[in-house]
Image (tube, rainbow, N blue to C red; front, side, top):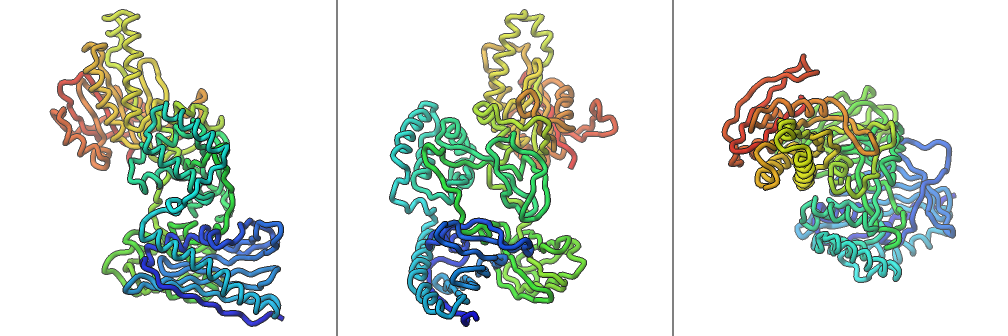
Length: 619
């Protein structure tokens, strides 16, 4: 017979507001580590597991505790909790609930436990353990998080010890000398080094350069460049993380792009998915193991911060109704459940509906649209015959990491890691990419005028200038074709800026005369990345159109699609440029696309020997 449940409740007042302390306290992976819990691992308790549940155990030889964990529930930024059902050990069940209540001076933070001991004799021991040892550790963690939230700093900045082993410190000294000789940004390198020395394993096993750049208030691309150099110098290593597009969680990580083989299986969604260079493949870094070994330990993998794009998650039994308390940022959200089809669109607006009841029927959601306020009286009701996990998540995918598209369109990355290619036969889609083809106007005339030897020298020199201009604006040369260059960028405005810079450099370089004139075509859209001749190459209509647009421009002319001109930053760039004489609209056709008309803008560039044609794929 089991003992009666033991109710334990602690309460503290802290200065940080709920939304300020939420990223720290709801990071259950860090919280459980900081209060001294052992690391966990997936285990097999039974053959069948209810959807959304997990079978876990502590990853320690001398401690045998196995449990089935219900789905975490949370309502940003006010509460979260979980229930564990133990199969062995001192406890039968433990329910944990954390509540954050805003006050005039900050937050009243309350933690509640409902513990069911497995044997009556364990009741007194369990109560004593929670009221002394665990309470002290939880209190220390909470007040540490409060300071971090108020000071807006990261945990590593409070660390006082260098965590590198002696051999790691010796190797680090040599690596830093090599990097300084490579003339990388010394201040950024110093920040990265401090991070590697002081941060803990939880963050070091997957470092996001853009996240640190935002925190350090530094240009993203400048930080990424130092990370790439550091990886080449063996200060860091990197992985490619593969995200499921449905649940947005990492389902697999590989050391090289050549290890990616579609489809990828998502264990959370229980289905396969295909990856994409823009969103679902991201580059992450970690310290080189000879500098500092990083443990791949986890203390919780299912809390609110593991899916930070989800603002509300609730587990409802059949016919159960749940009243919710949340504070949502303005924007669009998707509401879905795990055991039904479809989704509903929730739009959060100021001064919108304050009281909303959302009922799930057996047929599921069918694209219903609901407007709610930021602090709504929101109710979920499960009118189906099965338990349901309701999730309310931001619709927009916040791509805060380095995508494969960005990495492979970096000239620096392609130069230093030329062997990073896809496996032969693998085709990976790329949603948004800008392709630029350049060519020399009347190159035959240049050879006739200058002679073969002099003309070839000018061709080689012009390739160097193109590479410099393209790399400066976050692009990369994919290949050269005769006198032409195929380059790739993530944004059309970067391709345009690279062209203008190359134009200026060529016109001011004494090695070239007026006979050498550059023209180019740019097109933005979707394509497919493949491995061709041991490099990443791109195919598809976007590439074909870009290669044909190079022939459309007349002398000193730039051609942009209406879509690109209106939706990208190109419009403001053209207005600010001092080299534009005329802008007009026109329609044109391309060889191989006879049934399609392209609406473009013709922009005349004055006093330049260079010409450009730019377009964007129809949406």
